[in-house]
Image (cartoon, helix red, strand yellow):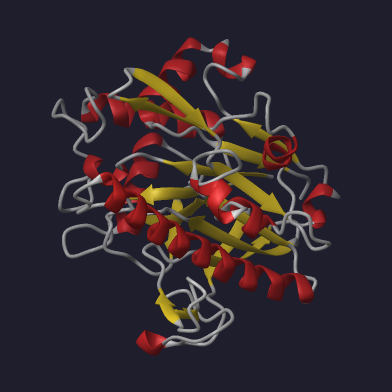
Length: 341
C-alpha cells in the first residue's frame, strides 16, 4: 500500500471553467513554465508514484467556475492513473483546496468530519474544522476566534485488506504580512499571523489526541509550512507547528522519520521536500515542509517513507525524465509512505 502527499503549486491554473485541462502553450502560474509543460510533468510524476492514494495540497479550486473533484478525475483519466476517484471536504476561498485522489479498487475513502459544529461563535477544544476555535492567542485573558483558511480534510479509510484508519490532510500556513508599511509592522503582523498558525496546530493536535485516546490508527499528512529551525519566529514561540502536531516529546507523539531527523539535528543537514527561488538573493532555498505523521499501527506494518527529491534521492536522480518532471511540476516534491495492507 502506498500513500502520498503532494503540494502541487497552482494546480488550479491548469484547468478551464469546465474543469478540463487547458494543456496548451499558455503560461501556467509557475514562473516560466507553460501549461503543457507543467501538465506533462505532473503526469510523469503521478504515474511514477503509482500510489493507492495521493493527498493533494493546493488542489484545483472549488467554486462557481471549477469543481475540485471533476478536475482531479479528469486529470486522472487523461493520464490513465489508477488513483482516479477524488474526494474533498470543506472548500475554501484561497483557490488551494485539499483533496484525496485514490484507487477505488484498493481503498475506500469517505469524508467524515469530527467534532461539534461551532459556527461563527466558536467553541473550545476541538470543534469541527469548518467552524471557529475560541482560544487566548496573546495571554491577555481575552478569547480570540481562530478559523482555518484551509480546513483540514478528515477521512475514514478502509483498505481492501480490511485495515481501517483515519486520515487527516492539512495545510497549515502563516499569512504574509500584507499591508505592512514598515519593518515594525512587518514584524508585528508576522507575529500575529504565526500565533494564528500555532493556534490552528493546537486545534489539529486536539483532534489527534481524541483519536489517540480511542486507539484509532491515524495518519496526518500534508504541508505544515513551518518546522524546526525554519525561521526567526521559532525562537520567539519556542516550538513550531510541526512539533505541536506531532506531539513532540510527549508519550502520545506521532512519528515521521524526516521530522525526527530534523528535530534531532539542529545544526546539521536535514531532509528537504520543497525548493523555492528567493528572488532578492538570486538563489534557491530548500526546506522540509511536507510530512506523513502516523501512529505506531503503520510502523508495525513495515512502514517506509520516501521524499521524491530529484537531487537528493538516487532513484529520482537516475531517471532524467522523472528528475526533470519533479522540478517542472511544482516547488514541492511528493512524500510517500509504503506499508503492508
